Image (cartoon, rainbow, N blue to C red; front, side, top):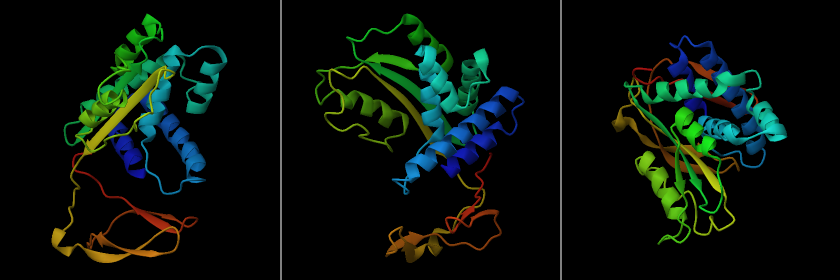
Length: 240
């Protein structure tokens, strides 16, 4: 999570849009609140705040009444008004136009063919989020999950595979919102592979495990977390 937030902040650093800055602030506030909830039961977890926030914001295009109000409050976007989705459209364009590193995001909506979707929702999600709407093939060979898993794998260079296990989708599944984000970059100062060696890694349960650790001698900025008793180092990527 920390790395992704750094990337988003770096991308926005040179943008003049006040709405983009406000959207970044909202996304960070949402992700920190979410992490507190998730970490209470699963402390060892990595997720993409951008993916969750953008998918739920995309869902707002079809929400009305109390549902829309609760979503806006939870996502910290109550002050945006009509500028919310155009701002996300601008953000998506900026993310996918980065050239110094590989940074790509994609959205898709998989819909039960027997579930009626308002045409404006399909049109708006594509217009603002470039989200493709595809019917779920409930009787597909290999199961309906394969269609979704193949999309995710294709957008992440096969790094993320088999997100949905067999049986995850059935006739009661109305809609699946998907967001993927792929990042591949090179640090400004790389590590010497020859200095990688096995060392002790302290697990949350107090036990030790031998893992390969990179070694270097350099000055870096760190954020000290006294509560969790850890240091977070800043390792900039080339070009951002």
